[in-house]
Length: 201
Figure (cartoon, rainbow, N blue to C red):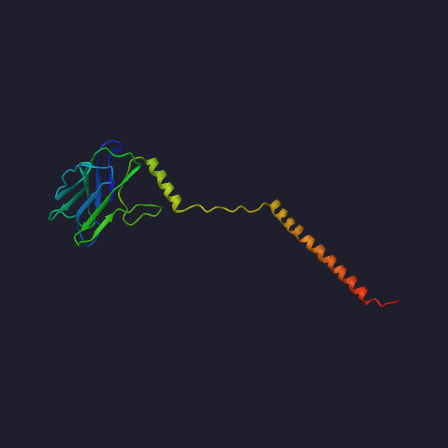
C-alpha cells in the first residue's frame, strides 16, 4: 500500500493517489476505505470506474473518509492493483503524513494498513506515508531509531598511572596494620622470653 502526490508541498492543495494491491491468493478486494489524518480534508474524488464512492463529512468541511466499493465484476483479483485518487485542500505544515487504509476482501477479512514504523524493522501492514519535507522526515526517523536502540554508555578503563596510584594507595593502607602486627609479635616474644628466664636472685 502506497500513496503518491506529484508536487505535494505544505500549504498547497494536492491530488493523492493510493496504490492498492490485492494480495490474498484466494479472495478478491471488494472495498477500500481511506481515512485522512487531522488537518487534511478532501475536496473531491474523481470517479473510479466500476466502483461506487461514499464520503464521510468532516467537521472542518469536505470529507474525512472516502469509501470505495466494487460493483459486480470489478473486484480486484489476486496480484492485481489499482489507484484511487483523492483531491485534498492545503496540506498542513508537517514533515510527513500517514494515512489509515482499510482493505476488505471477499472472504470478509479486513486488512488495516495503519501500522507506524518506530524503528528499523518494517511493520507487517505499514500505513501509507506521504513525505512533504524529506530532511525533516529523515531526522525524525533517526530520532526514533536512536530512542528504540539507545547507545550504551562506555565505562572508561583506568590509565596505567591511575591503576598504579590505586595499587600504591592499597599498599599504604595496609602498612600500618603490618607494622602494628610486627610490634605486637615482637612484644609477645619478649614477654615469653622474660617469663621463661630462670630467677637468679
